[in-house]
Image 1 (cartoon, rainbow, N blue to C red):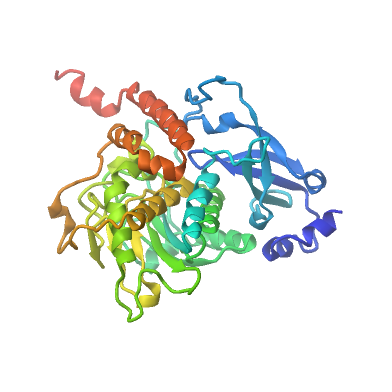
Image 2: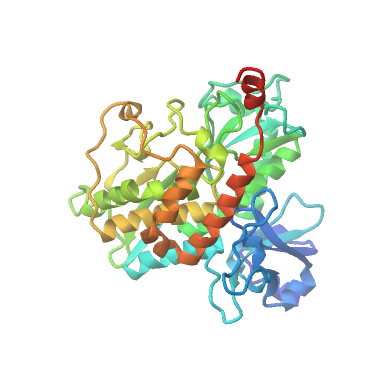
Length: 454
């Protein structure tokens, strides 16, 4: 029975198991922060089952493990079981495990088969379907920035770069240096090996400007498939780092004075009937849809930043340096703006959202970005005039802290309708619970500068 079942899996999973006995299957789903939740079951059991159950309370949990009061307003906190249905197209290896293990992403439904509205993958599927209902096919390409750091077991200790092959800590200000990439060769080799075993195609790995900071680019494609890959890649990269006595972190700003880590998202839209890029006209010029998409980002993204920058640390990235955005200006080939139009031919014309941090949940972040753009197209929103020069001169027009971002999110009923009102309710409650937890912590800065001086 298992042999017949394996023959239906994606080719990369079949290749991984060739000549081997499958031991275990990890049944996983993303929670709001993007952590993999679920169950590990024997392969023989998984091959027989069509679904399994998990309590919906996994979506009420904060990043610290506490709970937001986000349960149903009428029934209270009863931890109702969800039905989790495997998406077998997501089956992939877990090549770092000690035995032969596969991972499968699941979709969450209630007992009647209705998608759970606050499951992140369902939120993204909802937005993608809105595009398809209009005859559009959205296309995205994420870029993943992250740091490889020395092991850090003490939260009070500052994060430091990992030790390179040379025996020296990774150096900063070495963007695009191949020598710097070589310093992390063993970790990168494992990243490539794990990605190959999982059937993922890496478009490239580069050294970024921070000490131990790398970027991985993925091929453009279907938003749900790419969000699945980012979800998988975060775990893959962490496991590769652990093999070499280091940590991989996706914090937006892990090291003081160093660049932050973003998840830039490149967007384009294909017309389903013609197969043409909706952003380019018959003569190769920019279309109204192209400008309206940018206009939607400018108008609606301030309210969506609470999703794209979901933690207090996220807002430390928005500083006037290291090509980090501080506003929603748009320009062509300008990395100081929050919205960038890269150099390309008409067939590859796209819009890059540079606001999102790498600490985001990829499903929710891509969903929110696509929703803002589609609202622009639906309502024919014109963008501001293209910015000329360094955008830092234009000042800041985005929230500077999580509390302010959540206030804007709570008021954005139009955006809530795109993502789902019940998702918006649960997300806001959970994030406010996290923010309140943070405000109860006294920082070293406060002790150093206020203890004896105020």
